[in-house]
Image (cartoon, rainbow over all chains, first blue to last red; front, side, top):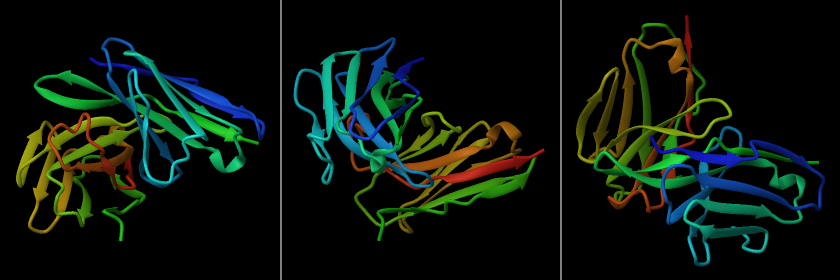
Length: 117
Length: 114
């Protein structure tokens, strides 16, 4: 089945540094990938839609300059949290569309837990 | 008011019991409904998706949609310890939900006690 790999699975960084998270579709091409953020005991919140070869579409309230998204190829999207602060600590999850069995479904990565000290 | 409401639990039931998980929603434009299962420190995986009102069964899982009441449910029969996870409902307006924004519930944390 479709697999989405996300790396790193967890990262700890100092306040003010930047962190890059990678999302790869391993056995299919993904024109569109999605980035979510999940706080403890809260739902997944869509941050942005990542489109291969074009600019990402950000949800209202998400800072574009804070969360840089690059979708350089059909199998890779990256999220860079710039000048991270403790309030950016969260679980970040990517997903990509996989087609199969007559239905379009989203396949999620395992998530990346970011802790900013 | 949130677009999708889901009791976060936690919910604990003995092994073998029937589990009922529920979500309500306020946006009548939602037409497509999904249930995801998320194990600790993992990404969500799709369990079931439905469109029309009524029931859809897949093995031990049954998804139920009542559009008139804006209420959806997931039933798990003969629950197993391996079913212990967080279950999230999700909804979308259009059918191409692979490219459509999904609105998620908060998730219900379920524990099946052996």
